[in-house]
Amino acid sequence: MGEDIRFMHRYNGCMETELVLGDRWLKFIYSSPLGRLPLWLAIKRAWFSKWYGRKMSHPNSKSRIPAFIREFGVDENEFAEPATTHACFNDFFIRRLKKESRPICEGSEKIAFPADGRHLGFRNVSEVSSIFVKGQRFDLPSLFESGELAKPYEKGTLVISRLCPVDYHRFHFPVNGFATQPTLINGSLYSVNPIALRKNISIFWQNKRYLNFLESPRFGRVAQFLVGATCVGSVTITAKLPGEINKGEEFGYFSFGGSTVLTLFEENTVVLSKDLLECSSQSIELYARMGDVMGTADQG
Image (cartoon, rainbow, N blue to C red):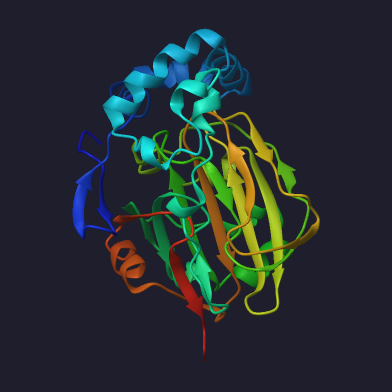
């Protein structure tokens, strides 16, 4: 738990160390018996995230932006508007990017990553017995809060897209199709940082989350979960739903904090990218940007 968080960078082919916002605090909370008290009393509670969210929406929080950009090496050339135009830190956090900075992979057979982030992908979720640590398995009925809704995905494909505070925090649709109105499944707001996840993967089905279905002629019924986390009490949907959507179209955004998008496909509908599968087989996350190729349609 004291080790650095390492991931593979798709674009330079190198292993890199993640710069974690609040690293020492997270390690204390999730690695120390003493840390369990503030976790139980406040941090996982919705009121804590709402309080911190208001703090990040106050005009005084604007002063945090320049230091954050410097410390985490955020590329200002990608911004749709200059950082100086944002009224508060949360306004900067949900910034839009120039369209050309996130091109959407072309071709009806290709699937796009729904968000910037560090990704894990598994061909058959029923065969996964090691996510970060051995013995952690995905409980789909608990995730869906329904055995019936979970059943089509029992042997399906799962992609976990974890967004860090330094990432672009708008999420998008991975394929074309008809998208439903998201449904809220209430829960806690634990951190989704690997420091926390390595301790307890069930955070995904304990946390507050939204479930959306995307009916695709090419890829079947795709399920997406928008998982809130500590300091992310707010998930905002910007797409007009229910309705027809295009691959790469904006779905919505997460307010301040880390968060996760889970994407599930039915059995034998998709083939994930080789580098994503290879990294995930070793419990190594792959960094890739929204719009880049996540996989292709299964031609079998």
